[in-house]
Amino acid sequence: MEAYDELIQRFKETRLLESIGGLVGWDERTYMPPRGSAHRAEQMALLAKLCHQKLTDRRIGELLIKLEQSPLVKDDESVQAVNIREIRRVYDRAVKLPESLVEELARVTTRAQNVWQEARKDNDFAAFAPWLEKVVHLKRQEAQAIGFKESPYDALLDEYEPGATASEITKVFAELRKDLVPLVQEVTSAKKKPRKDILSRDYALDRQHLFGQSAAAAIGFDFTSGRLDTTVHPFCSGIGPGDCRLTTRFHPREFNQGFFGILHEAGHGIYDQGLDADHFGTPMGSAVSLGIHESQSRLWENQVGRGRPFWEHFFPRLKQSFPGTMDDVSLDDWLFAINNVERSFIRVEADEANYNMHIIVRFELEQALIRGDLNPRDVPGAWNEKFRQSFELTPPSDAQGCLQDIHWSMGGLGYFPTYTLGNLYAAQLMEQARKDLGNLDDDFRRGDFAGLKTWLNDNVHRRGQKYRPRELCRRITGRPLSHGPLLKYLRQKYAELYEIR
Ligand code: ZN
Image (cartoon, rainbow, N blue to C red):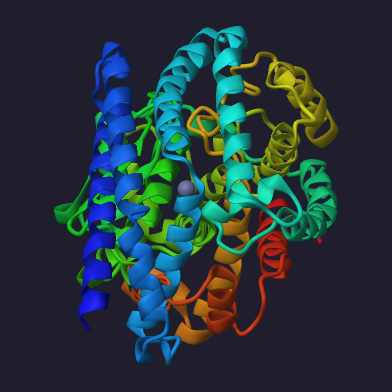
């Protein structure tokens, strides 16, 4: 059908422009010299404007109306129907945003990211504050322009997690917190403690790079269609078919950061590489949501990568990769150390249990920012207060407090909750994969991860946006999302390691 082909053609062009933005954005955060920031901001703003212009072209609206009355949408699970439905969703969001706001957001957030990087390095919140004010101001405008039923935060959240609302997430998080707090308490007061020191020995950077890269390849990331570079704040950028960029950061005396960062980003990358290339640039060839995306990274990083079977395969290789470093370390020591539970300041270094408490702090703060209940200039005080309530710790500096994450500088308000949603989805998906695939652990012990990867390809990746996150979860696992599987998984893991009941 002509109208359908034209719609797809036009939409694909917006996605191609976006992927060019992805590439210059990747460059900005990896190789661009610092003084290139202002010019890069202009490039990004132009791309955002062009993309927005193309997406909001009235012709797309006309085509959608025509197609929505055509037989193409009869079967709502058909490729055409899914594409029409989801392009409608994106189009409706885009036409509500004035072009000037889109352009200004791209310009301000590109600059703000650069200022944030410096401010974090110098522990100088005052330098970042005016930029945070600008970003929050623009995001509040965005929420008003998009519209919402209950809370302005919902309008922002919807961009990342279609259909989710703050009130629904608040409920799931409250249930999680209720069970998580006593578990963390129990684990941290256990007598048995891991030998943490084995993680902070000399781990030569080039060897970390090679070892991490080989693990990423083993779990299924295809390096002929991707690469790995270093950055300040690790991310994965799926540029398009055959091109997926992973980034990480290494520390010469710290193992976890580099290695688990790579596994995490490789999990994202395996999702991007698993999307149907024939449907590139259309909803059927796109990821469902950030929450589901995060479930893929968490699944490989934690459910697989922090488990015993995984290390039964990799531990001897680890010892070979760092000769002499690990002579006095057993597999049990190692497993216990990489699963150490401890309250700490930095989210990306947090263990699997405490991690979610970090997210809840941010989720509450950014809702207050968007509602206008919290002045961006007062963020450090509010942060430290909330942090004390959740962790009984006071951050020694803003760099280890409210300046640690890039998200707010890049305008990603509404983004944080998708991390914990990802943890919840990961646990529920893994529970189902174990039911469907039999003894996965034996595969892992042999270094064979293909069964699990194929299962994820079939059940998640290649379905594109056929289902919204909630529905996808129900289709795969037969149940709505709950905190049960994550809690069960954590309880079981820590019971063994810490020898609690
Ligand atoms: Zn992630």
